[in-house]
Image 1 (cartoon, one colour):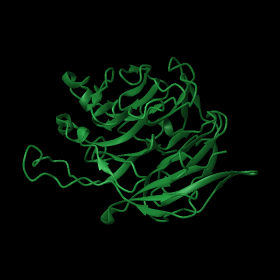
Image 2 (cartoon, rainbow, N blue to C red):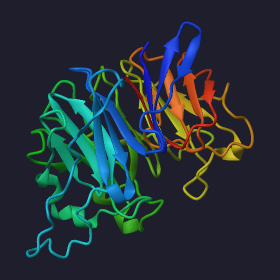
Image 3 (tube, helix red, strand yellow):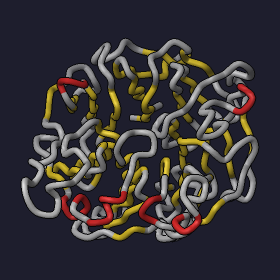
Image 4 (cartoon, rainbow, N blue to C red):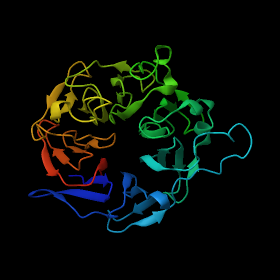
Length: 361
């Protein structure tokens, strides 16, 4: 059974499956906000991104399953131009937090707030801003969907093609490259921003607030999206998107997890609305589809049934390689695991710090 890394506002916790059940360990970096964690499947190295306020963003690397950690370089913008078209860019050229972190094809990729994409080709020894995206004129229209500035929260790597990346920007839509960041195209066709934009811009791909995207690893042409305006699916590698309607109790939320092999299955965690970011009627549930979004089933066994005010962030729902084990964490410090595809949930803790991300190692 894989370990589960849990990134929280006060450290990085690891959950391990023992013979008598799941065991929550002591935190790494206690008291320090951890925003992202990823394990590189190529060599087993683990990377954690920290947001240390006045001391800036830090990245740590472990090559011994978390027994020890070393500082590596952190993504950083070059100096802002003092002249030219970007001298009056209102976006700060300073990394506030690392919002996404992925490893594959011999590279590390980091998405930041503000919405810069960074790449490392030396295991975090150095980072380079992907200027081909940052310098696009469309970026000047991106805006924050909860934070002051736009950010890149989803990076999907195509396991068949190391040069193919799909990004989601909040709020800036979906962007794709097929040449490892040399060129980019906005692929947001089908999304509807009518919930927060005027009618003339509701289908504008450059202002779509995609909350999270996830791909089916075994059939990566199938992607799922939790959008500000509902749930979407793509069957053509993210070039276009189809709305999946409004499952009960709500189509609003932030997290999505895709089954690793079955392109018809995915999980979502509904919240009441943008205005009330908590479960509908105080009852926490997980929605699952097994038929590509044609229908949904609602799972609640083991989850708080009343007076629940949990919100599950974008990265706080994950599915393991077996396709049946799921982990979920909340802003209220709840951590749950399901070993039967989400039908039943076991609470591992109600007392953790706010959880930013869960990740199977």
